[in-house]
Length: 391
Ligand SMILES: Cc1cc2nc3c(=O)[nH]c(=O)nc-3n(C[C@H](O)[C@H](O)[C@H](O)COP(=O)(O)OP(=O)(O)OC[C@H]3O[C@@H](n4cnc5c(N)ncnc54)[C@H](O)[C@@H]3O)c2cc1C
Image 1: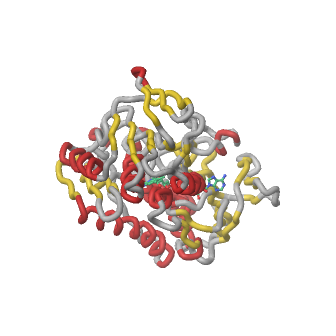
Image 2: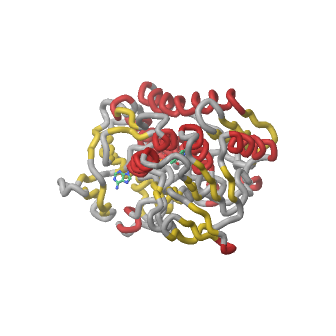
Image 3: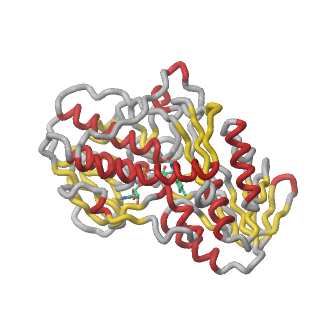
């Protein structure tokens, strides 16, 4: 493959990592990145923003993205894979590409949310929730529906910031059920200490005024309901006629290239990696960074007429913040199964904060020295036993 114009759609963790790695390669490439806003959004801090414990999760794009990458502030509205062009929401002239990287990430889930509930998952929804929380009266009840890691982090953050509110975390299954026994105990102990009421094995079915109607005929009063039940990906790939799975994720092969269009690659939350190498991967920053780096390496391999390597990406830890200055570090196997060892409390809170900072440092060091980012290898195929799930 000979390529000069590489276009990346999405400047999140995967897109920026890939852009910097390609821009720092020895190839004479023109790398362009399309993103709707001029700032990089640290999505992993949005619960802090929503609760009001952090002013913003926006970081100037220029501080994380290589200077010689063309940044286009716009939204891609359609990909034309036959003409190799990307169209823009603003109506500006479409941009042509030799290689395309699809890295549009994910956002809030609103499907299934009762009317009047706040969605949560992107910068806009975090800002809306932040404003909504400030309007609540003392003693009002905030119900957070969905107790994945994001729901847990949000509940802890809101409870700590607003001790005058009653915070409730509602889970379809057990809260912190995916952690080790000691990890789950640590999370539950901390949530209890923060005054978070935990409602488990309960499905929220609808919202009638300020009452949540749940499975089993249970009704719960709620002045503010937040839907944090997983992420949803944009429909751009599907609407452009590219191969997608049932959740509209772009289907890619083991090297992260699209089987029908070898010049299109994908990385991050918005792609479906084959089970052979990605069954254990969950939508996360911890996956998006290696996927972005691997996609860049696959593109480079193609340019050098080498066969791209299959992805190998795994995990070592899950990091959960539990309010400011507390957290949990759960050690895991490469395929994300919890190990027994955990770090909890203040030390874990400090570690989590350091890891958040390191995500930005990894992006920045990739722009100083292309190819510097490394990641834990994935499990051997026989070891994989965890189903795909969003964070
Ligand atoms: C509150 C919260 C806490 C989290 N904490 C953690 C954590 O501790 N650890 C962890 O591993 N993960 C965490 N996550 C998950 C993590 O943030 C995401 O999985 C990660 O951001 C995915 O990276 P990405 O690059 O695929 O996409 P994103 O970071 O979502 O970036 C995608 C980019 O593409 C842009 N885009 C979308 N559509 C278009 C378009 N049509 N045209 C152009 N650009 C477009 C978006 O605006 C965005 O800038 C958390 C998420 C939330 C919400």
